[in-house]
Each structure stands twice: as C-alpha cells, then as structure tokens.
Image (cartoon, rainbow, N blue to C red; front, side, top):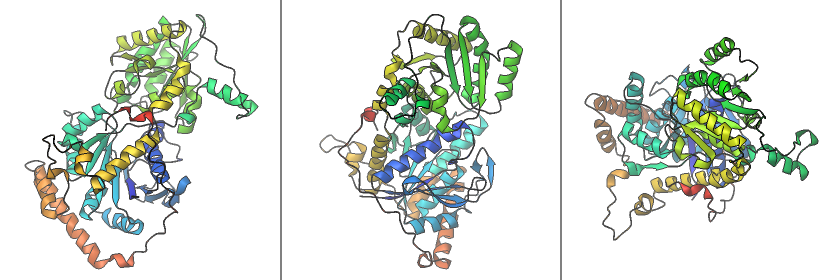
Amino acid sequence: MPYNIAMVSDFFSLNQPLLIWIQGGIESHIYQLSSKLIDRGHKVIIITHAYKDRTGVRYLTNGLKIYHVPFFVIYRETTFPTVFSFFPIFRNIVIREQIEIVHGHASLSSFCGEAILHARTMGLRTVFTDHSLFGFADAASILTNKLLKFTLSDVDHAICVSHTCKENTVLRASLDPLMVSVIPNAVVAENFRPLSNDSRAADQGAMSPIDQRPQPAPIGPDDTITIVVISRLFYNKGTDLLIAAIPRILALNPNTRFIIAGSGPKAIDLEQMLERNVLQDKVEMLGSVRHEEVRDVMVRGHIYLHPSLTEAFGTVIVEAASCGLYVVCTRVGGIPEVLPQHMTTFAKPEEDDLVVATSKAIAALRSNKVRTDRFHDQVKMMYSWRDVAERTERVYKGITGDISPEEFYGYYPGQGWEVSGDRVRSFALIDRLKRYYGCGVWAGKLFCFCVVIDFLIYVFLEMWFPRANIDIARSWPRKPPADKSHSSNGGRRDQ
C-alpha cells in the first residue's frame, strides 16, 4: 500500500553553490530515494531548514515538495538543537500532509533527531538512515554518540549504507542488530558516462557535434596520465595525506598530472605545497564544483584518487568507476565493500603505501591490463536507485505491519526462532520511558525528562491548536505503483 513519508534532514541544499560534499552526499541520497519512492506510488515530502533566500514551500520535479523551515544554523549547515521549539511547526506540517512515516537522515542533523522524537510522541512510525562513521574516544564523538543513543532509543528501524557503518551504528547506539538494515547508496549511471559512451551516443545522433569526442585510445608509455581528486579538503578526507603524497607521486611518474576539485580549510595548505614544490603546471585546482559538473571533471582523468581517513560508503568512487576511471583508495570504513577488486587498488591510510598504490595503478594502466571501458556497464548493473527504493519500501512495510515480523526479520516457523516484542515499538508513554531510562545513569533520567516535556507540549498543542483548524494540503496526483516484480542486480548486498 502507498505511504505518506516525510524525509527530514538539515542537509538538503539543492541548487545552492555549496561544496561538493553537500551536493553529492546526503542530499543526493534523499533526492534520488524520494523520487523513486514517488515513482512507486508513495507521497514524499522533505523537511529541512532555510538556505539563504530559499524559505517556505518549494516544488521539485515529480511533485516532490520541500518545506524550508527558518531556523538558526550554527555550523556546516547544522541547525541549533533546541529539542522542543521545532515541534509546533513540525506537527503542523505532519498534519497538513497526513504523514505516516518520518524518515530522518544523518547523525549530526538536529532536525533529524528532533523530528524522530516528535514523530514518536505523535504516534508515527520512524526510520533513521546513518551516512557516517564516528569514533568512541574523542569528546566530540562521545557527545555525538550519546545524542544518537537518545535519537535511536525509540526508533522503529535504522538503515546504514554499508556493513561497516552498521557495525559502527549498532555499537554507538546499543541497537539490536536485527533492527538495522544495510541498504547501500547508488548512482544514476546515465549521468556518469565515460567519454567512449558519449562517442557512441554521438554516432547515433543523440548528442550535438560540440559534445562529440573520439574513442579513447590505449595509453602509451609516454602518454600523460591524469589523476582526479574530488573531495572536501578536510582532515578526515585525507587532505594532509594527499598533500604529502602528490610531490612523491609526480617525482616517480613524470608523465602524470593532477586535477583537484573541492574546497575547505585545507585548501590553503594544498596551495602552499604547490608553491613550495613549484608544481602549478602539474596540478590543476578547480575549487568547489557543483554535482552536475562532477562527471565533466572526472572524464578528464584516468585514475581517481580517494585518500579518505574515514568513510561509511563513498558514493564518489562509484561515480568515478562509472565514468571509466581506475580507483585508488584507502582501505578504511565501508570503502572495501563498494567496488570489486578489479576496479580498485587499495592502500593503507599512510603516505608511503598511498604512493606505492598509485604508482601500481599508473603502471597497470600503461600496460593496458585494466579494462576500464567495461566499468560503466558493470556499475550500472551493480547499483540502482530503484533497487534502493524497493528495499527501503520493504523496511516501511516491516515497521507498519504490512509484512509479518517473521518475514521482515528473517525468522520462519519451525526453526526455533521467536520474534521479540521489543522490536515492535509501542507508542505508550510508559514503554517509551523504559527504553530511554536505560541510556545511562544520568543521561537516562535526562532523556526521560525530555520525553515527558515533549508529551506535555503535544497535549497542549492538541488542546489549544486542534487538528480541525489545520488545513489538509492537496496532494500531488499519485503515480500508479511501479512494476514490483522488477528487481535490479543492485541487491547483491543483504539487507
């Protein structure tokens, strides 16, 4: 059956000239997932904060409605956490749109955490998708993990983008592993075509003469190999590692150049390194680029270098492989799960190993041992947003009871398994308080206090601002459900 779904996150800056990491990460996931769910007959809205002059209600293609709520932003597009002040307008939106499921995204999103709390108070089903990895030792991670524990103590189900991300989230939030599904990101492969595909399309009259390009020839021993880097220039993205490795890579491989796209606080360190080593003619810095420009940057290269120190999934390396680039990346987080071995060369997150791995990749390309011309079709078969939407829809069916707990959690009669009642989240206040009370000696009591206050605010709003006074919004005409017999090959990862 179709559902009315609200996607909630601080990170949805569509059409804003921001950094590539925002344009290509969580935002892309929310937009593509929402579009495919609409194609499958569901109603989807997005709730986020205002971006500059973008406030109020906006519509995107396919009838996707966005609520830009004016709120104070404190750091990297994250709103100031107030816990309760978001409740009145959130309740108004949920009632107007007749929302049944609230789906929050990102651990660091204040809107996400608060929306899940308020939705449970209102008797709505909730889902959380985690896109990041966090540690356990530093002060920032400890605080983030405690807030995540608060957010997920009463959530119906969680989704992670990789198995490594799932392990991390289960440990951070003390979740039952069966209440966490693994559904990877995907790419729109047609938006990341290699140059050879452009040539074929041009031959068929699908492209203008300006975009026609010749079929790439095999790389000769004296041909220049271009290495592309598209990333936030932050510490956790391995920018310091990149700064140290670039001079050594260029010294070992003379016919090599770099193209670096992205911006951040480490950009000045990168520019200083280029000046010290006089490498301006070997390294081209493009600054921040929009997501729709990523493909045009990638097809200029042969190798994609991803020196990240931590990564839950790494959508950009899938995009690079789809563009026909050989990928060199660090073996951290969920990255080893993303692509097959014949598309990648892995390195330890160390300077020496990164230099060696990049040199091996250059040698492999020069010897023409790597068939990068096949990468696009292979990625297209592995990743599909339609598959992601189907698997997310199954989660919705599981938490709403449209499929049995035995089918959802994988337990079948006659095998000695029993489905625990703890996995079916009750809306009763006393049951919710029991779940929050176990979050810690002091934190548990504080969380229970917040839940009680949230419940009292809800009662006040129901009395003084009754639902009958809120106009119901007219829904965009629903599409007929997509053919549910279809199943793409992206389902190679278990949920």
